[in-house]
Length: 192
Image (tube, rainbow, N blue to C red; front, top):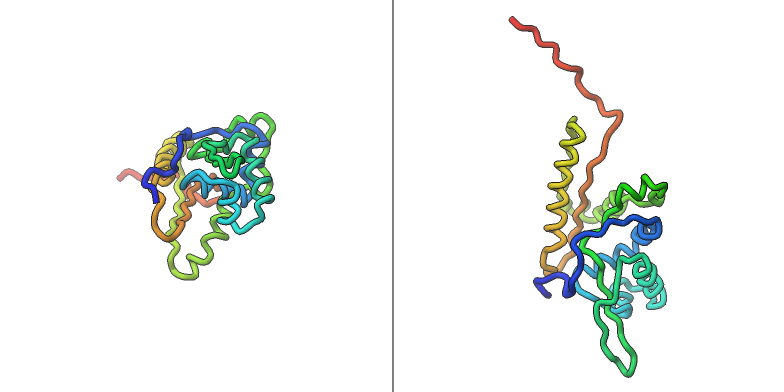
């Protein structure tokens, strides 16, 4: 496999600003298609074979992603007088912009990457192959923002890894406020 993943040019990041874009990435089959295209450009037929779904179903989902600006045709080739289209992502990473939610848009009710990660990681957990951490810290919002920027850099690094090996590995990260988590009161120090 190529060490330069994927095999076409794409932007580093794209902010999703419309409800159409957010709905497009909230479907599990469409996120799988986007994941496959991290490796290389592919035709609808290749994608249908990979996901074991009818070509017409995959063509519909590719169309939704393309209409939302998340996929594009990156090259074509002639096959028996027909142009075969190879699709690629428009960016390595998509993220839902805060402006989307402030503008009245809302996330679909099933839009939760951790639910997907929990489903995908169940088999690895039962085999003792799940690597995981959970930590909690009472920190200022500015510190949370700084830390998240560093996490995004690691996510970008993961996205740029050469696609090779026998297994696909999932990588889930998140940071969230916990409103009801207990905290200690300020320390009452007695000088003495």
